[in-house]
Length: 510
Ligand code: GAP
Image 1 (cartoon, rainbow, N blue to C red):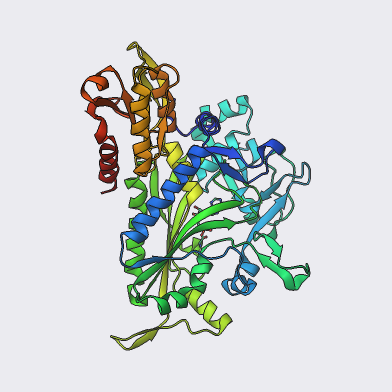
Image 2: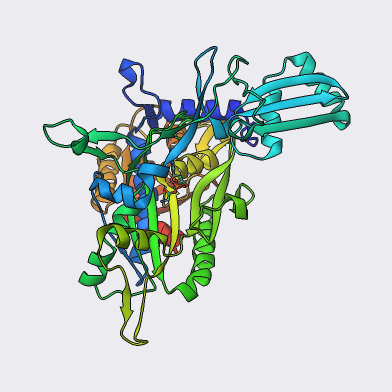
């Protein structure tokens, strides 16, 4: 079952594990939660921090052509006017006239399945993704078992028709996926969260919570050029919270109203933009595979011409096969000089770069790899979840859930156990645990219950190494180290534990 990660059952298991083990909680759960907002628990926050740290290390620290910034969430509203967000950051909204459910019109489809002239199915569906296969599958879920069987049995004779609610012919009405009722016509809904600044609450006090971190980078592009010796080609990176008043948050943390982004704006000469676009598209795809997302579940999908924003010259999405469908993890776009030109025009500030060597003045083109931290976290959680068997303390095989995180991402790097709570074993184990913590490793000390149960708890948390202090430790100062994935146990010197774990983490980073 854990091999098939494309089912609702798999998603339910993952969500249950995330709650049980403290990866992800519903925000404000004690008050019934709040739609589109999530909290990360003790294990989740470590996982998420490790993802962000891996990104920061790999995209900034290890490179000479990248620098970082950390900008405010609330910016001068003129930023959002210049960027086009005030006018254009809209989703098409439709309501069901019957049950009042609310949808994004570009996410709801009307689907008909016919056998000759005989209409077998005429429903509203809300698939994740635009592919006909996903749309038909979401529609089939609305069919009763008899209709579904009939469609499946006569698959070769069935003709399908489907269209998005925002692209329906004028004489057609959208169908509600919830109750089958009629949908209203689509209307525009701006997704930016509004707030007011200061004591007055009139229109002059209106400001927005940023819907992307990118604009803080553009607004600081001149500051960075002026205060560092960096010059194109170079990039500015930022990790931070973004906020979007999503009409229909769904699929767990995948589409939330508050989320984190990790974004790069890479500035280069217009003549080199195509080359840098390809470079970043491939680099970002590889980053995910290097950290353990299998390439069979990951794909790079170049956008069709019609899909491209008017200012974009090229765009590709890194997509992952989530249990609810193939969906975007990150977008990489060649945004041309659109953003800098827009800010130059609106602010009156010069955004050109003068190249001392070539004596050329130009507005750089921008390549933007823009990823979501929460989506990456969800993908790594899906990928890590594994069910297999491991022997208990009597050597009997027992089924286990194990989170096979890449060691760099694992929330807890090492767990330390005394085999029994006597004979000085807890003291030795406590010292190893403290040494690990001092060395900057997240370490967990556990002396309660059978050792097999303790291993099992760490497997569920995804801890790559478990250290056990046993009778032999008292004789020769060695401990066992158990590998989470291979279950292999080796003996190493007790005073070499931190080095052993650190070496393996470094090895995993090469
Ligand atoms: N600056 C470009 C930009 O923001 P985007 O495609 O709207 O582009 C980039 O967002 C990434 O941010 C997405 O690929 C996704 O990972 C993440 N993201 C966007 N909306 C999100 C949401 N509602 N919930 C979680 N992550 C989201």
